Image (cartoon, one colour):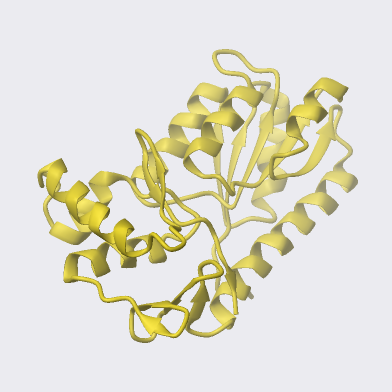
Amino acid sequence: MSDFTTRVLLVEDEDVARKTLAFYLNTIFDEVVVAHDGQEGFSIIEDNFKDNKTFDLVLTDLKMPNIDGMDMIEEILTIIPNQRFIIVSAHKNEEDLLKLINLRVLGYFVKPLNIDNMMEMLQKAKKEVLEDKKEVESNGDLITINKTYTYNLSNDKLYNEENIVKLSKKESDILGVLIKSLGEVVSVESFKEEVWDDINTNDSAFRTVMKRLKDKIKDDDFIISHKGYGYIIEKPFVK
């Protein structure tokens, strides 16, 4: 049995398809959350993000009311650039495929659903998710962030090649929060809560420390700002 918990968000407006997909998803994944359209789906992603939670997989229809699947995917990617998706649609058209080709889409189901094919793809998706989780855990304490910087989990030190980057306590704490949430956007509110232990900390205090941190990694800056959402270190490869 895996020690990792797998979470899936299902976004589907059709009742029968939603109930069918939810049933089979629950036989494979540990937690399945259901949304009825793209607007609700994105709200769930956003609310979970604020709580520093993510989904390993988003299974979504494309044609839905309020916000369609394609627009929802684009919105999600502004928060979680490495989010995985599987598409469910009544039609498989070239225009949708061209839009999806550069996104992290693991598969495409066409309704009516072929249960055997669907289960095979979902099992494959879960295997990929678990392999990614295990890779990060099993590759030791040294995380290679990019060609210039590495981070040692055993001593919480950042290295520029062989040299330790000297950071203040607050700079180190901010970096630690980002390292803990690799591949996920961390909101400014989360930084305030975890680093200052005060959600009401002045924005300028946070921005000052963040700027100092980014100045110290300007040789190959790896902290990406997502305006209106927060900051992220894209998921690195691990030595």
